[in-house]
Length: 112
Length: 113
Image 1 (cartoon, helix red, strand yellow):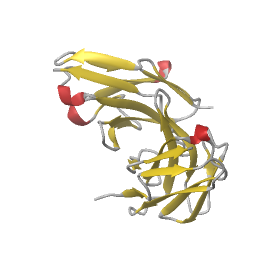
Image 2 (tube, rainbow over the protein chains, first blue to last red; image 1 turned 60 degrees about the horizontal axis):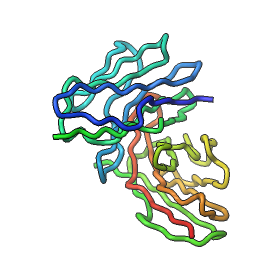
Image 3 (cartoon, chains in turn red, purple; image 1 turned 90 degrees about the vertical axis):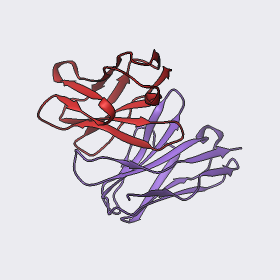
């Protein structure tokens, strides 16, 4: 069965600090990978996705993620966070049967 | 503007009641999903559907069923509500294809008393 592991439950940072959120998945076949973000009081929305090609993908608001197939990882990064990046972040792999699973989420709190 | 609409924002039901949660999307999407979101557990997939009348079990289908009679509507049914089904329920839809974005509804916070 497919599973997703997000290593950090809660991360607290100061503005301008760098952010890296870990995500590992277990799935033997082809998988597409997504990061979604949920800002306080808002819907979940797409941050970025990897389907094929360049393993380093860029998303909205300066976020990027790197797919490392050998490590089954898809870590999210941002070089310099802002207060407005305070949110919950979810890693979500999708298997070939369209099943879209989510990790437990990482709450990021950015202090001004 | 894309839209996934869930019929209720808040719902309070009694233990043992049959509960229907409705979700409608206006984007002609093939895929639809039901999740429950609980603190510390993230989103857990209950059921999904990739076509009308098709349904697939997710990771936690026990105690739930679904219905997809029309493309735009995906219903989640709690046959006999229990207190451990108190949660936030999220519906999502996406186009056919494996690299397409899922769009989420605003959620239904269900409390079973």
